[in-house]
Length: 366
Image (tube, rainbow, N blue to C red; front, side, top):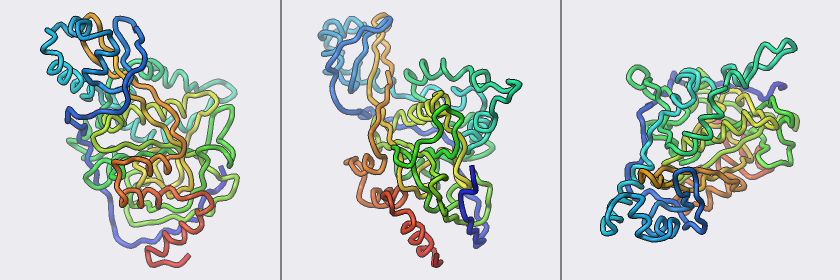
């Protein structure tokens, strides 16, 4: 890809953002999504339930209270307490994302920053590199644990020695303060290449405060970038959002895994490489200001094992249009959060104005 940006690096103060990789997951039994099941699907050894993990939804899905009590192995009068406990356990994180990927925390961190063989290596004429061989584990993980076990915040045992090693997912002492994650790609190994400028997710880069992503770009001093994006330099950006304590919040690292797997391993996509100075995937507030991002939303679902009574998540995802518009539709996000989100993902055609405002806010004229 051609030179993407005019870097304006202003050294102000030495500042290296420290981060916390402690596992974080909501432990409130009230975590729920929305909507009830309208279908009853038999799966191997169990029943699929679409929608919330509630007593009424499961009763409707399995065919009555007696059937549900039989699957759970409890008297009918104990159904509510049993369901509350098992729904809570179904959303407890059981697998570290870096463990699920199977390459170790350093590889996963570098991949999400835009490096590693998954981003950098292409098959040459001698066939010396194969992404399929390098990532052979991922397909199996995606179809099993990726959809049926809740991933925890990636840590991989790093927090004791390197607090907040996975800095992509922290802003100060909190995970993604805006409640959104974005991935932006600048190249493709797929058959279709990056989408054209008129396609969903195709974005122009406006500006970037690199201080917030210091552990991805390894620049210790305060530094900024303004981009002079040309049509050939369009990137592809996509992301997702959640409300505090929601089902989407509980499974956000599964959604991140879904996004990265689909974008990298889909033969038509094969999206790779980060915007210079930014991670490839991270909290939206750590990413560059852009003028568009596609949106993905998780659909809540579960399975109940008819032999053991165990309840597990059964995840699927759907398109939700434009990330900016979707975020603005979330009732659980306040006006201040939406203001900052709208400052991060601006309207189409407003990139130059956003870059000027970005620099003026820092007492600089562009």
